[in-house]
Length: 558
Image 1 (tube, rainbow, N blue to C red):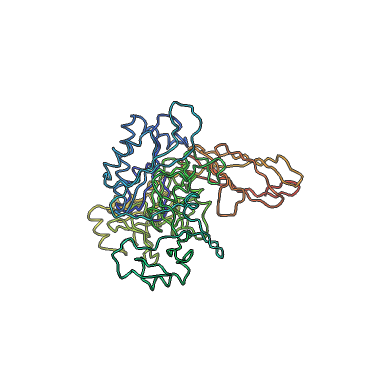
Image 2: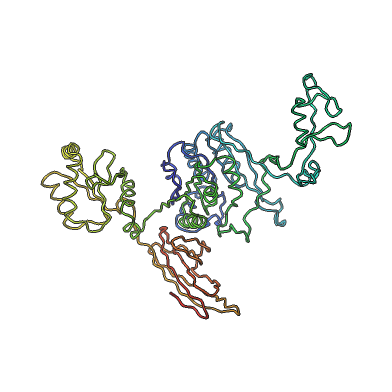
């Protein structure tokens, strides 16, 4: 199980099947709600449309079956100490609880049916009450689950009724609590204190110490002494399952990224803090706009996010980049296709290790005394990687010699069994290499398997991008308003653009995450400015254009 933070593009069912059993601490899922309306298509890209068609083609029964097989995998990968939170609404909540969660997790594992009030009632357009709540079902894998109690601040009425006293010198708010022992049959605790005889909660020595510390007071002579309970030492009101204190994302919210069903970070913060600890692994198999992952990252949890939509994955990637700092943990993004240029010019050692693992082998971590071999298959057959095109005959000769020297017994065994003596991975192979491999096989019964990178991972060319700069106006303070037009082209089709108007290489921190048109208008003060725009295509591949502007009476593009 790779516990490094991962953002994965693909069908979550297939990805969940590949995750290790009992490896996840907490799962939050907000699957598409059951509705036959097209507004459930949020991003509109090809991956989401396919998923939309899959889950709606057979009505409620089909939807429940579609979701159930995914939750079955989630139950398998959840640790015994783990919990799952499934977010849904009134369309299918009853079916989801009875037909999915109770059957897979068991009704004894049910913890709460959380009601989240996401919005206030608006108007009376229908002959019914407004539907302004969602349901979040909370189940644990076992009775031994992670639980960190959460508390809410006391409301004002409670404070005014119970915490009426304020210390003049400190400003601390407190209430007076009874010190009498409810158990009267405690002769060892019966004594006189400040002129009052009672069966007390504490011993006389402890009572005296608390009095000297100012924690026990007598409001006037003859009254029963009382204990000061300070408000700032109390944890608050225990959280219940009716969540009315977390507002949904508003149009003016700083969190807003343009994702229609985006959930507020406070909602996920509460769930994550309540049922996981630092460094635990959080999974969101329908990550959408990435709120779960963004919050998990801030709370020092590890995470895995999955989505069928290219746009969802890329928007989440840029959102995570926005909050990265020197102390942030790295994360990887797994796409359907990989950009040729990125792979071809990647750090050689990193590429070798990555492509060997993608091929199902084990990479050589030593990098010394390895006869030039970069890894091995599961049966220890050598693998060599060439991060190059048009590999020549000399590579075959050198590899043939290295394989014999590295393990002569395995070399002879593979020949005797008609198996490859080794594998060479490269981007392309030249005529000489191909001919020599054929000669060895035909005349000496020696098999060297040539494998192109594209046979292991799908490769595509990243989209092209051009940006036009159009000055619009300048105000009296010298502020320039500029219009930008980005044009992208890709055989896969362009999905969207993202913009960073204060770009500091190499960190791309988008101020505009999701721009479907490729046009933005921005204002600039006089001085030097660096703007970066990214184009993302339907394969999830991207390209970037960096624009340097000098604004001073006019506009100069560097």
